[in-house]
Every structure is written in structure tokens, then in C-alpha cells.
Image (tube, rainbow, N blue to C red; front, side, top):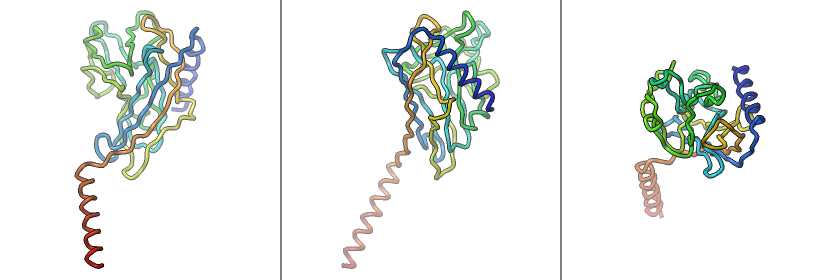
Length: 222
């Protein structure tokens, strides 16, 4: 795992160094607590507009989690039988559960089908001329497309715990496309934010009733 993560960081750094142009792109990573119930989370990425053409590769390091599924767009195009999306340096669900979630589009091999605008706009496989066959080696269905912000991962953490980010890790790194006509990329800055769970309306109502009851009891004693 350490070797793969080190390789990921080194690869992103090399790609960014080889890019001839620098941009001012920024990526906002957000982790939503209790997104699908207590002890669950969703990790999303939102790319800035006007200074890049979407995510080319990402590396996010989480802390305090139990499991994670790499949900970034990835499928096999049955038209060409080639993989599309974040298929390179992609962390498996088992590796992601250890905290480091990674993926990269193929900017190396000539003729690769690049998906521009990921993290900026929603899209579908069909809209990009792709006949999806599902992610190779994964049981996760992926037959429609993606939204914005871009869903990167889902997972679980101990109830009562607080998941977070390790932004100091060398594997916390992101590259974006310079434009929508080639494979040039540049390193992007990134922010990381944990969004606490919002109490259910029923919970708020119960808390309000309890408070009213406490006030009433206090007045009767007075």
C-alpha cells in the first residue's frame, strides 16, 4: 500500500512538472457526515470554473473511517473494450478503506477517451458516446453517469467518531486538465471540509418539546 501510494504521488508530481502551462484551478473536497444514515459519509469534489477543464487525477487521504468505496466515474466502453474514466492508479475498495482514495484518467496512452469537465458539470456515458459495461473488477453498478459535485467515494465511520482529512500527506494531490482539447494537466490547489450531519426535523421537534417541558416544570416549581 505504501509503495502504491508513493508511486501515485510521484506520478502526479511528474505529470504536473511536465505540464508547460500553470493554471489557477482549485478543487473543493467535502465529506458529508451521515449522508446515507448514521455512521456513513459521502466524499465529493467540485472543480473551479473558467481556469481548467475538470479533474484529471485525484488523491484524497481520509482519517477516522472504517470502510470506503471508490465511486469516481469508471467503466469499460463496450464499443472499444477500453476502460474510461479514473482507471489508472485507481485505489480498490479495500485500499480505499485504509484511507487513501486515488484515481487518474489515462493521459499517457494515445487515443484514450478523456472525460473533460468532471467536477464541473454533470454528464452521462451515453452523452460521451460510451456504451458502459460496468467497472472491471468491481460489483458497483455504474450504468448512467455522474453529477456535480462529483461523487468520489462513499463509506462508513464509527458512530460517534469524526472522519477527517490528512491534507499533509504527499498523496493528497490533484491535477486538472488545462483545456478540453488535449491531455495537458497542471497541479491544482485543494480545500478540504467536513460537513457535520444536520439533525432530522423530528429530532429537532423532540428537542424543542423537551425544552418546553423543562421550562413548564421549572415554572410549576416556582
